[in-house]
Image (cartoon, rainbow, N blue to C red; front, side, top):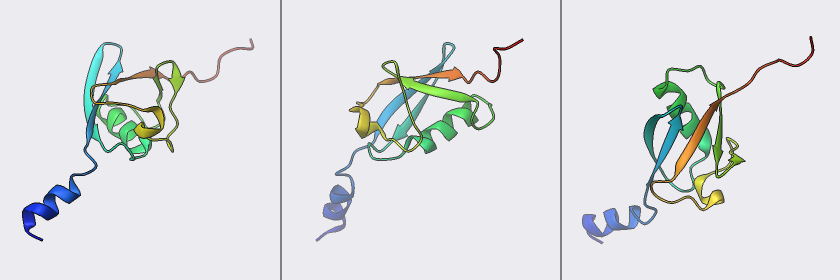
Length: 93
């Protein structure tokens, strides 16, 4: 097996570009379909200069969980994930 053959075998699982949108600002994150969202969440929070756990993320109206991955939601290259500020407290006066 040549080095080229080995490289092609490693690229069998292609990466996809997912776009994270926060109030009109976007960042693109390249991920493997089987990679947990936790890493994507961390990258987006760092890019938008927010503390970890600041956002909740949704795709197609469904909340994304850190242990899930893009393949669980049949995501494709160029799909957009929405980032929303996590609401803390509120309610009773």
